[in-house]
Length: 537
Image (cartoon, rainbow, N blue to C red; front, side, top):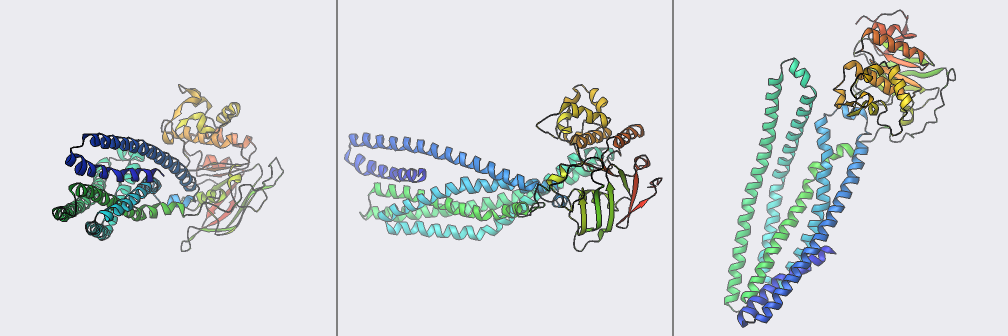
């Protein structure tokens, strides 16, 4: 509605110009001049108000649409399988997610502008045909030529856009990786090499962007030249119509105004069409997110797991002839592995580095799916899901802290805070005294990835976070590897006292010695060994 009113008003302005030239100036009619100027001011004021209303409506639509769409993509993204993230770098994922903004901008703002252009094209062309079909044909022929020009250049523009996107993504990924690894780079004296590599990526991005700008510059030069030639052609034939007495000067000025509006609107409309075609560059990237199936899409959230009390269930976790590989053509990491964890016992899982111990932890949590075989939870043959993860406390090698206070990290930003239980979990993890010595205690802010804390403090806070869930089962993957022997002994003793079944993946003899049973993983199989086993690697 806004678009229709705006364009109708826009179509009246050239007519006012014609009246001024043909009636006011020729007839020296000052009264008519006052009326015409008054009408122009009223139309302009109305256009301004309606234009503001239309822009505000567009902004609100754009913001609301983008917020909901971005939220939906975010929701989907972080429910994709973990191996999807493991196969992509952070910069690439970030760039693909950012494609939402580009697509949204085109589908809202550009789509509305395209509608306005379409209305104006139809309106101005209709009026132009009334004035002169011959002159209108020149404008139509120019529009067809512009369409042909755009089609001819589209492939080059698309390739340039793709190259710029790829170069920007590579540079961003490299930059993020460099920031994360700045300590290693400084310690090993490799910052100059890293900086040189970044410069090359930065130059590649700038060259790709420069090439895209060069294409735009050449294209715009050709386009401006064509527009100027078309305007000169229309003026030539229009002036001849005036000289032949078929047009008045006012009619010629009005037609030139309509022709200018038509050319601008048809060019904008064609550009918008090719903007939509160019979205394929971003659609392909975003499709990698939205078309990937979410983790366990069809698994219900509630498994009806039993409440675990002492001695109520004998076997808490059971691997039954489990096979696993990362792909059809990949070797098996697990080759018929079978073992169990009983209620209230601590089981240590040991084995050479890279043999697949951490893979077992991810299979237990449902992060990976078994190739064949079964994993039974709490006496049930069930598939891991959200409800299971709420009952399992886990500390994995990849676990990290988040920006926020220590309280927020232990409670994992939970809304309802149980302060007494929070402190008790910190005590059990042996980190309470360390926290109390900090200036702000539990309110101390933790930097990204816990950068303000030592490695041992981070691990103990992660253990406290796992305990805060009041889990039925604990899964620990090298959870005490950064602790000194005394602190580790304290934490391991705590594990014995909490009467919670635990599977701990470990290398250190002190950790292994605290277990009730020791399992050795080797060649894809798991077997029990004597409890006095001491890990040698």
